[in-house]
Length: 314
Image (cartoon, rainbow, N blue to C red; front, side, top):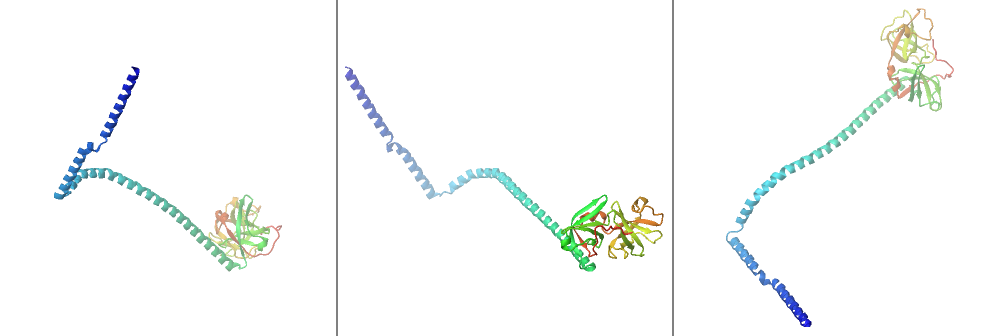
């Protein structure tokens, strides 16, 4: 009895499997898509017939009427964006170009300054060479490495010494024939110059216009002239080294008389003048404020003197 039931269940399962297989095979049959094929064939024939009779101008016209509004709308939307992107791109390019131009302008300004400096340097060297040729062909140009302007001391250190032929006692000039001082010490490679602005410096001088003799002295870094009272002197008179000087050649330029000196500006090395002399302020050819900017000076040949000899020419 139980065996019969199992047989019936197995038979039904085989029958159901057979039906499902046949149904799946039926659903995949090409006959099922036949209506769709017919519709596509009829549509194709209709399109061919329309093309033969009327052509596709109607289709192009239809597509144009539908697409033109879309194209115009997209153009209105895209055109501002494109303009904005183009403006941003052009702005960035302009900024880059401006930056390049600024850098180039800076380089040109630097080159221009370098050329100006070179021109000034060439002119200064030309004047120095001309001065050397006119005054002392055997003189030597020496670079200035240090300028000392302190209370009680006014000196200059040169990068040239005994190895270059410099000696104690040689006069030192600027490139404009301005007397600056005299070498007081030398080493193999350097020389020390005591300037005429030094408090202990004394120089015998002459007024070019009258030939009057006087003494140049310094106080607080400024130059003054002590002259006998009663001499004919006026503002603008040129002062040069005297033929009575034992330390400097005659005729080296120093400066011009500017005004009468006050009592506090009198020579501190002279205790009592007793009204026999009169003092005058002197403006050097090169202002005192510019003496620290000398880069080269001219050392004239002169007699050798020892360091122990004082520079006091009264």
